[in-house]
Length: 267
Image (cartoon, rainbow, N blue to C red):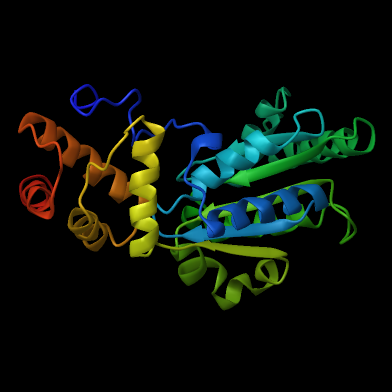
């Protein structure tokens, strides 16, 4: 719609931008490196941050960086995950028909992970996204899973990713002290500051083939103020502003255009 008006060869703020073309802030790169370390050493890690700050994107980058001959990444994202479904989903991703009995399914998973690690030299990396929604029962089951080798080196790396509530309403509570003590690596995805917001917008436009600025500095400041530096919100606002700009044939988008879109589309 607006790509042709601004002479763009790609859509700048889409969610399917290849990892190699992402805007990599020092913090984002550090989180991915930490998760690579977690995978290599079969540790237990937690990534937390507000909605839209890039947690799932970091996990996607991790998946692309892991050698598929050495690592097997399992991904779960369910709002109402139960221990039974947890084992079932993992076993299905491993190509195994799970037993209906929870204890038997757990035993199946433990045996499969041990064989993959000891015989096939493959480390399993289990990622549980949206972990702020996990029940206390599910968190307790994860703690039991971490005890698989009686506190010796685990054959699996486990990563919990979730919104800020993961700490505030789950792991930070006294009843979760046992699992909290087992966390090896903790990372937080923060909001962009004004400088990073500007860098993100300009990077996305360059990736899409823009040869000149499309947003004024005042427009970027207005977008940053509204979005509070959350990448997902920045992308959504920019997309709507670009559509508005193309419809009104604005070659350069200023803060007044941004304010109009925010008032009409986001109020």
